[in-house]
Length: 220
Image (cartoon, rainbow, N blue to C red; front, side):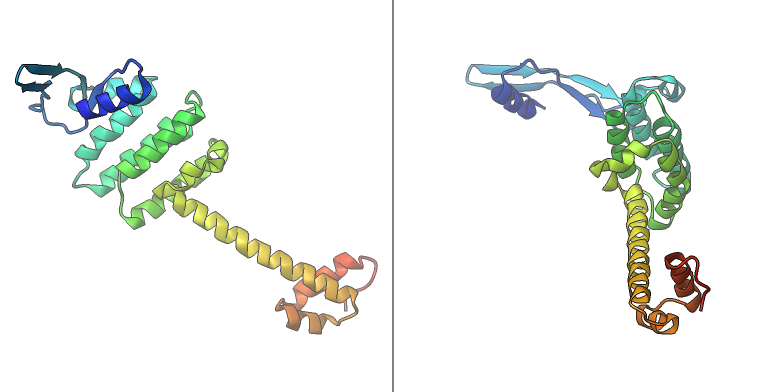
């Protein structure tokens, strides 16, 4: 704490408020001031502390302070240490109810908290996939602004979601290219059968494209 303090003070020459956030739930952890003494040179550095185990969960849930959500995540981290299914439930509730559907939470806080909680409350791959599926609807409806955040795209849960979106977009783009090529070949006079074979589309799909190009002409 003292090292961080003097480096920041030396670089920015600003007043610094120091606080150690203790995320473990031990009641015996009481940090002492940093003291230095050497041949008449003495220094005592005191700093503030914030302990998760001193907070009341119901009060945190009612709080409008964004930091309360981070504290809840820290408490749940220890409470669900040996139970991933329970962690899945509390993580889903935090991300959904406290972030994605929370209209009072500013975007900058929502993105930072989502990223923090997603990494803090680790889940095995299968549960992460399930969480992605559960949250995708809320992401598309209530939190569309988060889709443009590079930070969110790197979060473990949503990384899976964005991977799926990219793959679907890639496949859609490939299909669009095939249909455009088929339309061009039909305009050049190639038969439906020939075009279907060349671009690897079904006869019905090529006939549909042909009908859209020449709406007044009967299908072959």
